[in-house]
Image (cartoon, rainbow, N blue to C red; front, side, top):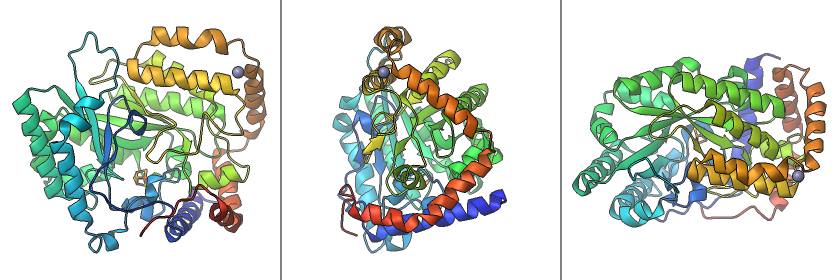
Length: 428
Ligand code: SF4
Ligand SMILES: [Zn+2]
């Protein structure tokens, strides 16, 4: 089975699952004129993150990005006009500007900013890609950014903004000369542009996560922005079907080393389980295990050992239990966990502490005395041993057999989803 064939079949699976999700109205698409998010758990860091939502991410429509749950949010582009989505996105964007004090200033959760002048951080993004005009039209982007720029200048605030986007949309913006319309605002707002990169490993990035992203495209986008003096960050996904815990750790280490070697800030995303994804299907039917809390601990130790002094921060960590929407099953609460509940809670507490404080010395005190002595460390070791036998099969082969399994069990999965009380209905 060629990689092309695995890719094609995985995309078809994603499309079929997403169509089913849409036909069953899994999420509520009603637009309220309010951007989504705002709490620390909805964010990639200890500050608010807002999503301008309304249009479905085009990449999700094409069957890419297997673990993504945002792919369910928003209207397909052909429905956007009828639903007056552009109006709503404009309202959402202006809400952030008008209510900046309440929505941004009062939601700074970072503790201990000593040694640094007090900074105000926030994220504004689309469901999929901030630079995509389908999702946030250029006129809205440019109006919002220049109003924010003026606000910051007038009040002398020390604001640092983050936006999330796909690399190819940045390249299009530069090629079509649109970047000039927002570049000054981005610079004045101390913007860091974050890309959905996820992994340096080609097989993991493009065959497991289905990012459809070449290293060349990613590096091009990074270089283009650096030429404009704009900072970059990249998401690093921790988890994924078919991967062993050891492979997850190794991949994280390689990806973070690569990003730091190019002075790109890593944004760590530990997998939580989004409904209506291949991973969710595999999990419910016994073929997928989430990242163990003890594996997350290793990840944090790698981050600590490798961290580089980047501006505005050396790294960011998203809340693994957060949303929107908040997942019912995540790495720190699931019935396959080998790490015991006490240790899982302890590690999650440590992760949440470190993402708010960046104080590694306190992190040691918080965690290690309890978890080093717990019996579950033995269960975790046994799991690693068991998985080492599985990993003798090439990763491509393991991915393929999971894709085949998902194909064969698709109807069973749909039946489970239909009977699942977590499935919400909404207007479409
Ligand atoms: S680009 Fe982002 S929002 Fe779109 S499908 Fe991929 S991960 Fe999801
Ligand atoms: Zn334990």
